[in-house]
Length: 126
Image (cartoon, rainbow, N blue to C red; front, side, top):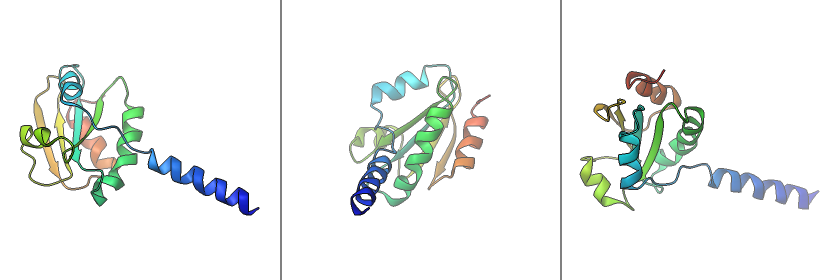
């Protein structure tokens, strides 16, 4: 029984540890913005508590809206050029882009699932 509980605990920890999107490179961000689909780029850091809470939500939305919208994460501690490119002053920051790659909305602070969906809808998600 103890061995079963230990195994179950390790599986749960592994599942939670992988519940995050990889940090998107500049090329991936540029490709998303040129894709003709609404895009949200969440700029944060893997060590940020609020960013960690958002990670599984972003991953879920990336899967749910695959092919209809782009949901990206950029770790600005790993990619300081992205922080400069987008003028990030605080993390997390979500930037919403329409299908033409034009910024239409910027939110500073953690966003929940509903807020992210509303932002994508405002950016043109159908």
